[in-house]
Each structure stands twice: as structure tokens, then as C-alpha cells.
Length: 129
Image 1 (cartoon, one colour):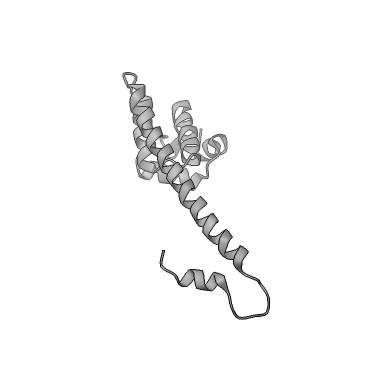
Image 2: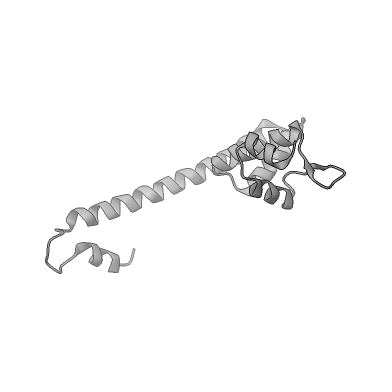
């Protein structure tokens, strides 16, 4: 199948597929005319990459996960380690966002929002962390 068909079936833009090829995440065959020729394995990899990226895995994580997927002698512990590290990073980001939300929520709640110039939000932004 050509890149347009692969893009539709994998739910990825053709530009992303070309990028994945440039960084050697996928290596589709080439027809005699030089066009990319994607097979079912390539399509599986593209779908895999689309899902992994949607879950926030980095390109390097995706590279490692693809290598493990291709390695039939892999240990699931290696896959779990990568996923666990990513999950821990997501938890850190959630905690950071919750802290930001709590701080900003408090500042907004303490602001009268009237015509006076006094503003707890601006004062709060002046303070060091």
C-alpha cells in the first residue's frame, strides 16, 4: 500500500510517517518507481506508534518498545519497566498540575475582582515559589 493508504489506516498524517522513516522507526520497502510500499507489518508498527505516542511515550521509548515487540525472546519485565517509568512521569506531571491549580485557584478566590487596583493575583505572582 502507498503512504496515503497507510496514513488513513494507521490514523497518522503522511508527514508523520515520513518523519518516522527519517528517524528509522520504520523502514518500508520501495517500489521500482521509488515510492514507499507499506506492508501489514509496517502498518502494525505505525498503529503501534500512533497509540504509544497518544499515551505520551517519547520517541526513544517508542524505539525501545518497538525493539522489544520485534524481539520474541524479550522479557515482559523490560516492557513493564519502560511503561512504569512513563507512568511515574505522568504521575509527577499530574501532581505538578494539581499544585499549579491549587495555587492559582487560591489566588483567584482571594481576588475581589472589583474596580480597586489591589490584586492578590498580581501579588502572588510577585512572590518567589
